[in-house]
Image (cartoon, rainbow, N blue to C red; front, side, top):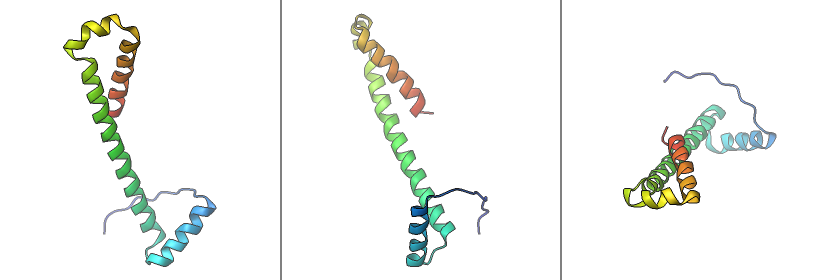
Length: 94
């Protein structure tokens, strides 16, 4: 058995009802269902973050391409878009 850390959370009444129903249907404890749901959600967040990171890197690469640098220097709206993309790329690749 692995070591577990105690956490206390507040849930909505509807979540409580659904959790109890699920425990009866599956035979799993409430804690096990909550751990599994947390694992699934954390995995989904990581998948979305990786996808956003890939998109940001691709867009940033287009902004920093040597072929485009002369054009970007003359084009203020596009340059600001690239500045924003650089900020997004830093956030999603952390």
